[in-house]
Length: 506
Ligand SMILES: Cc1cc2nc3c(=O)[nH]c(=O)nc-3n(C[C@H](O)[C@H](O)[C@H](O)COP(=O)(O)OP(=O)(O)OC[C@H]3O[C@@H](n4cnc5c(N)ncnc54)[C@H](O)[C@@H]3O)c2cc1C
Image (cartoon, rainbow, N blue to C red; front, side, top):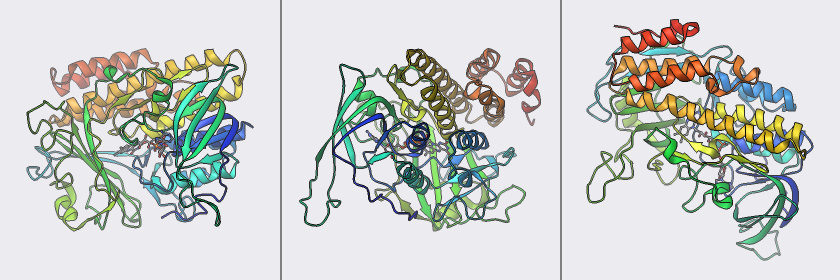
């Protein structure tokens, strides 16, 4: 467990006037807070929970590492590179659990998840990490570490603070009102105030929390709820469910990847079933982050088992699976570690906010949508958006050009979220057809490999690239209708620069 002086010993005031209020002190929120402080903006960092916390989403792709390296240089964030350096034995700082991300193994298992699964239903697809590689992060540790860095940079941190309203001020900006749970933090001799009122005036708002459901309590819709932003869920094609947890005592698998000398130095393994996938990420201390995903069926009133085992999408025994590397036996010996309440199953995973920025507010990608973790896109996308939003606010702050720049931010983010959805949904549609599923992975990787895109001001996963969009749409329309060989030939023809990625093994 991360053990810095956190929560910080600075109690926030009950009233504050600042340039920017950031909702959510996860990695994304703390990172943008640090960037804004480096540009001289005053910042309130507001989180409804307390840190350290349980959080999943730990794969930091090589693409994310490259973007975060650029961000660290741009804003002189000296604490960030050690978290990205997979060769560093100390791994990010004292007590911050992390590991190396050397690549991804996609291992086909048939036919369906659960005890019906068999082992080794085809040759695995092994995708080595490019460049320096990426990292695995224990997000509870990393997020607390990043929030402590934001506090050290003089962001005012309001933990355990629930916001109830955001009123527009007549002169511009917002008045946020809420309550801070101060139980246990009042100095000796003072009366504990379970719900102390908080008033924060800010010229600009950033939502860096989740978009609803996956991390929020019922009725807590974040900035989308406070500002009455429209729902955009109907625009998403992905319909999936997910169960995730941390386990301890999960033995290492015996996997077909070359060098496993370092126990923290393993590839990420996706077991691909005909009805979903399971994956585990392992840390050196024996903790493993595990997740199982599958298609989500809308519950039908009066009809039991629309999702197999439960109408909200929870599997009765989610991690009891037969798969590669002795999965069933290893799980038999593992112990549930976190969260305390048992594995998380948020029902249908997808969320989407319909308007992701305005003249005086912006949502980070994870606040704008939850699409699907299959391709590990989210932290990378967050890094790309923080780079873009940080630059934008630095160059246009308070100028007439700010509104137009935020319109461009919104249009870009919308296209990028559409791209992520457009790459995830066909992969799920291809489950059960290993060769087509492999193509869906390779299509994502072709977009992710184009690191130059962001460095040159391009969009995440080539979202603005018309040729790639046409190829991806054509592929999505062909899944289930055309053979893998036909789909591969079409991809090679449409994307000649990436043609050698798209092959079928038979
Ligand atoms: C099972 C699973 C696996 C995943 N795997 C990956 C992966 O391998 N790689 C990857 O890149 N991504 C992955 N993701 C996605 C990833 O978890 C998210 O993109 C990531 O957590 C976003 O980080 P963040 O810091 O922006 O927000 P979060 O981690 O969601 O943090 C948000 C913060 O906001 C706070 N908060 C919530 N509501 C409010 C409120 N109303 N007001 C103020 N604060 C609030 C929370 O307490 C929290 O501290 C995965 C997600 C899941 C569920």
